[in-house]
Length: 339
Length: 296
Image (cartoon, each protein chain N blue to C red):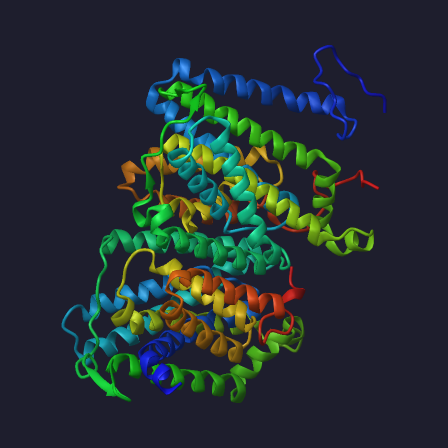
C-alpha cells in the first residue's frame, strides 16, 4: 500500500507503522479535543474549569492504567499507588525545593517509575487474577506507608500547603493558567502512552496479552516487556499525580487508596480497555458522577459508582471486552509482528 | 530467650488471635477461588457487615444471648449472601475471572456505602460477652480473656474445616472440584450447587469472623478493605484453594501484623510487603499452592 500524505500531515515518526490515512483520521479528533480543552477556561466558569482539570488528571491516570489493563493484559488494582507516590513526591519537592515548572512533573515521573520498578519486579511474575490480588495488596501497603510516615507525608492529614507551580518565577495564580498547565502535562503523558502503544514495543505487549506462550515461542522474553510496561505506566501515573498535587494543592492517603484504584479501573472498563482514549471518557464519567452527583447523594457517590460497576459488567460486555485476556479477533490485535 | 519471650508474649498471643480471625476469613476466600476461580472482592465487605451486625445486636452492654444471636444471624445472612453472590456470578461463568472480580468489587463498593449510610462514619465499638471481657494472667502477663477464647475458636474452626474437607462427601466434592472442575461435572455432579454451598459457607464464615472480630477491631468504614487485603495476602502466601495454606498463611500474617509491628515499629508496613515478596520470590505459587501460576 502506498502512503498518501496530505499537505497538513503530521511528520511521520520513525517507528510507526505506515498507515498515514488512519493516523490522520485519528489525529484530527484528538487535535480538536485538545483545542477545545485549551479554550475551555475562556468560556467556562471557574468551578467548571476546575472540574475539567480534575477530569484531565484522572483521565491521564486511567489512560496509564489502560496501558497495563488493555494493552498488556495486566489488570491492576493498585495503580493508584504510583499516582500517589508521584503526587507526594511532586508535592514534597514543590514545598521543600522548588515549584519551578518542569521539576515537580519530572519528580512525579521519576518517583512513580521507581516505585513501579520496586514493586513490579515481582508483581509481573504473576498473571490474571493473581496479579489483581497482588497489586491490590501492594497498593494498600503503599497507602499504609503514606498514612504512617508522618515526617514526610503528613500522615492522615495529608501533605498540604503545596505551592502553585511557577513558570519563570511567576506562580500560575488563576484557574485558567493552572488548567493549561494540567492540560499540557496530561497531553504530554498521553502522547507518551500513545507513542508506546503504537511502537513495535506496544505490538509486543499486545502479543503478550493475546498469547503469551506464543510470544515466548517466538523468542520474546515477556517478563522484561511486562516490567517495562509496568514502569512506564507507573511513571505516567506519577505525572498524573504531580498534576494532582499542583491542581488540588493537597495530597492525602486516600488519593492512593483502594477506592481511587478501583475507580481508575472502573473508568477503563466503562471506556473500553485497550483504546487509551476510551478510558479518558470513562474517567470523565467517573469524576462527574463522583464530584457533580456526589453532593446530591450526600457524599455517597461511591454507591452510585458501585451500581455502575455492576451494571457495566452485566450490560456492557463490549466495554469490558478488551479486559478479557483473549477472546476472538480483537481489532487491536497486532498484525505486524516486529522482527 | 526466655526474657525475650516474656517481653513479647502479649504480641505473640495477639498475633495468634489475629491469625485465627484471618484464618476464618481467608479459608472461604481461598476455597471459593481455588474451586470456582471467583475472586470474591466482596469478602471484606461481608466481614464489615458482620461487625456492624455485632454492633447492632450487642452494642455496649453485651449479653451472651445477644452475642450468640448475632453469630447465628450473621451465619444465616452470610450464607444467603454467599448464595446470592454465587447466583450473580453464574451468568459470568464463561467470561474471564476478571469480570467476576469486577462484579464483586462493585458489590463491595455498594455494600460498604450502604453500611456507611446506615451506621455513619464513626467507629462503633462492640463489647465482648460478659465473663470474657476481663483479663487473666498468662505466664505472668495480663491478657484479655476474649482474645484467648478467639484463639480457641480459631483452632476449633480450623479442625472443623479440616474434618469437613477431608472426611465428608461435601469436602470430597470440593477437593475434587478444586482439582478438576470439568471432570466433577462430567461425573454428574451439579457443580453449581457445590459452588453455591462453598460460596455460602465461605461468606457465612466471613460474616461470623466480622462478629467475632467486633470486640477487637470495632466496626468502621475502611475496615472492609483493610481485612480484605490481609485475607488476600494470606491466600497468596498460603496458596490458592488450600485449607492448610490458609491456616499457615493466617498464622504467619498474624505474627507479622502483631510481632512485626512491635519489633520493627518503623518498618511495620514494609514488613507485610516484605513477607509477601519473599514468599512469592521463593515460591510463586504460594506455600501450599499447586497450580496457581498456571491460571491466567
